[in-house]
Amino acid sequence: MLIGIVGKPNVGKSTFFKALTLANVEIANYPFATIKPNHGKAYVKVECVEGFFNTKCNPREGYCIDGTRFVPVDLIDVAGLVPGAHEGKGMGNQFLDDLRQADALIHVIDASGGTNEKGESVEPGSYNPAADIKFLEVELDYWYLQILNKQWEKLARQLSMEKQQVARAIAEQLSALRVTEDMAKEVVLQLNLNVENPASWTEEQLLELAIEFRKRTKPMIIAANKADTKTGKENMEQLKKDFPNHIIVPCSAESELALREASKHELIKYIPGENEFEVIGNLNDQQTNAINIIKKEVIDVYKSTGVQEVVDAAVFKLLQYIPIFPGGVSNLADKDGNRLPDCFLLPPKSTALDFAFHIHTDLGKGFIRAVDVKTKRTIGKEHLLQFGDVIEIISK
Image (spheres, rainbow, N blue to C red):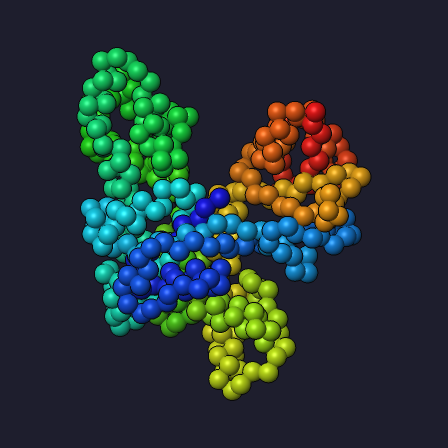
């Protein structure tokens, strides 16, 4: 799974990325501080099944704190996008291409209204952040349209004359954007397009097609950064009214980064995403003041810094992925003695057979049956898995 972090320059994208990954990236208060994409790992929070089995897990990847499992996901932070990006403005085409393989997008905006459309710092409250949500969707829509339009006229004439499979041709054209033939069939039917004569499709219809594919293949969550500021708090209420169908999470990337750095240096005990922390080290006056401000202005207001909540919501609300633990009824450990070492994230409606193939192709090919380890019940290959299942695969 790959989650892309997008937005215009200077809104705190790199700070947001660093807060999630603690990667060493450049953070600067000017447009285009990021040119090449940054790659790293974030961790989503899952209730660990160790409590159900009254044991202690030994994660192979990620970690577990007090019964909360942190499962890794890949992140890519691309350079800031500006209006006209799909036309190449601000190196937009290059930056958009970096997002092709992303499963979902986190759109970081400056909720304080302190960054204009060009990514330049302005007086907080003087710019409407709602414009950023609209602009990015438009840029992505026209980027999809641009890819769809490549040789479309020639392809559409050929399809009309030879009565070829329209959905297959569209899927091939947009395969780099993860559009499948089944998805193309659904969208063409949904938009009531004339499959007998695709050459008759108008530019408006092609744009509708592009918009629907963008929504399905690049679902987006809004990270309303700097929501802890005075204007940020005011703008949050209006943003939720203006975009009732969007997931908008108020956050403070700067605060989360400060807490994670303090935790890393054992100055505080802090579990990402929690609404409290404990001071365990010697803080100087400046550090104490900073920590108190974060508590008062961010955590007491929003119940967390919001950063962890954003990535959790991207995976579990937006993509609706489910965590599944491999294990055995008689043995929860791997060959090295590590108990419950793995937790895998699978797409919604995944079956026991899907899980077998996810672990290893040979397990899928030799699948005999599976066992729900919690209930000790035998399940078949078509059994739909549920959030937090522990599954044993029986294979040839």
